[in-house]
Image (cartoon, rainbow, N blue to C red; front, side, top):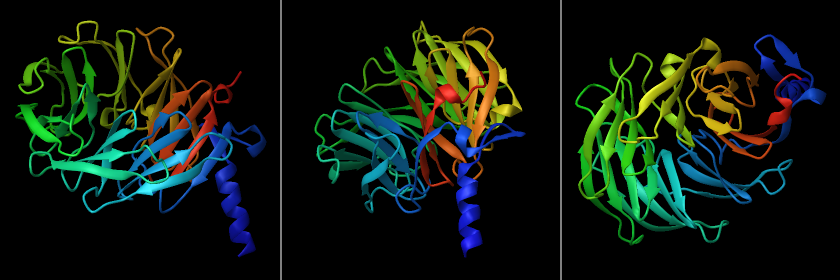
Length: 347
């Protein structure tokens, strides 16, 4: 038993900056870590709000709130589960009102997070009646939710949180690909699709939320998934099944253009993207960690390095940045890991 415990501690102490260069624990960039096989199992994403991190957990079928006030000692504050929630996947918020979608119940749930220790269900609505719901985006009283099986973007009026109502929908694709991500920009929703023989970035006009309509589509051999973050007029995103880092020019959101791309197996099947300064951080589904991309010249993004741990960050799915800290949620690691990003790169 003692030998098993020694190995367990060692496994959590080793961080990799490259596939072949392990660092000793003393050099580790990890500031703090939390492993919870109940409340963090199947972590899907991570969203920061003040002293708190919201972590929807797909396999765990819950939404967990962690305190990150002390980054060295993150802790679970509460975890919400409900028969309507199921596999939590999409998340957004408006103040203390939380919106979360479920993959296997086709539901949007509206929660009150005024008391972080005890989330309260306000209302719910079925999105299309059936189908997997991946991500969502909220703006000005409406939630925009792709339904993968129905291949549509649905619009939900949530101005009355106790009685959310579906008010409109638009077909995203008639192909075999499925809508996955959604990002709002101006009068448009940019929807990335996955799977199928050809994926795309679809542009939906949402100037009238009750009457969304498909206006254009962007195709390319590496385009798909398209999950990430807009900084200024550039949309930094990824496509995990192509090992692709994609940058779109969204100055004209109704007509996005592929601006630059990086295709590299070292990205480890990236599934999300967050940006801070001249760095992009990509959670790696296959790489068990975070890939770091240099975007100091956005026209020529370059892979720099990666920080990895095959136990603590097994199948990373979520990342968020605040100041010098990088917050990482790992699905199979059932973990929240906080990293000093200034210590990731070799100096």
